[in-house]
Length: 181
Image (cartoon, rainbow, N blue to C red; front, side, top):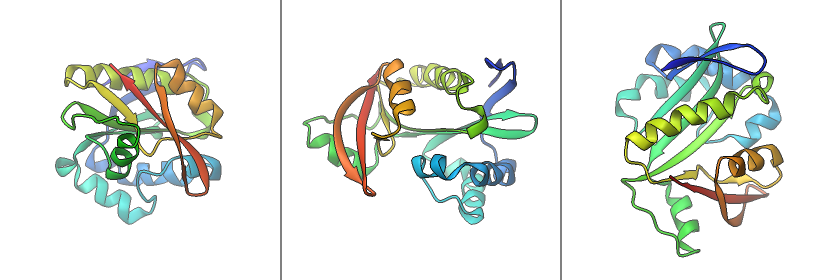
């Protein structure tokens, strides 16, 4: 995709995940702090799952973006066309229904040592531009966001996401949020 410069002057390349990224992605997921790991959960973090993801990218129903700095993955963000069944059921409880063809489910993560560098914003902006070109109308958060994650809630609100309801999952209060684009 493209090279960007962050607030800390780090140079990062944003691109799509490819089949050769299994080991670096596994290392990225392993390096996340326990707190970051507890807030990001679209799939298991084990080597087999990561290898399977990278080997099956051609059959994936979404896109997986990474940011690389100094040959190390420092962010990993997923988009999936449509919604997970659990997400759709929760939104339906609020009389919110979406067209699977124009709705994207989004799950971001940023390495602990790259948080607060502007990477999340710059990467989201790049992804958003691509989604607009793909006729996306709505972005929802993959499994919502934990209400206790004030930094993430602020990030989403800053980018125009609106809260649509709270739900209890995994012994935590979570918020469903969406962005109409």
